[in-house]
Image (cartoon, rainbow, N blue to C red):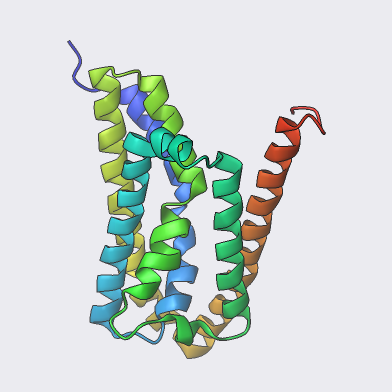
Length: 210
């Protein structure tokens, strides 16, 4: 009897890797932590990873109950995440990223790194769907657990060693990356807003389902 569904594990891992995009967090992490010392940056990476996984696992287990109990739809969750990311993006574009970094490096690790960047609507919805597909089957549940652990390791590794990249780029390079990450984050946030509105319009029958 198989104790682990490897095929299902790979499907979960690849899906979450594309959604969370650990390499893509490097410029954003650098932008939000460039005023921190190496120790603070390492702690922020660890806290962000822990928070992101806590959010994802929490919704995997209790997500449907939470949303139903609070009368929250998935598009509403996605819209809220998009607004939050847009606010962060505007601060990055305005050069105010230093104001977001708390002295102990915890604040930016919680928001926006932990959530909604790592533990965001996309990852939450994907994991909830995979849990439904698993249907309580042991090998598939084990595959989800292993995939989540692998994603957590990837998250931490890419953020933990972003300092090496920062030293290579220098102050000017980090500033450039900060502005670019602001543009990318703004685009991601606007796309999240568009997707949430599109889902609502489909639900209301204003537009046809694609």
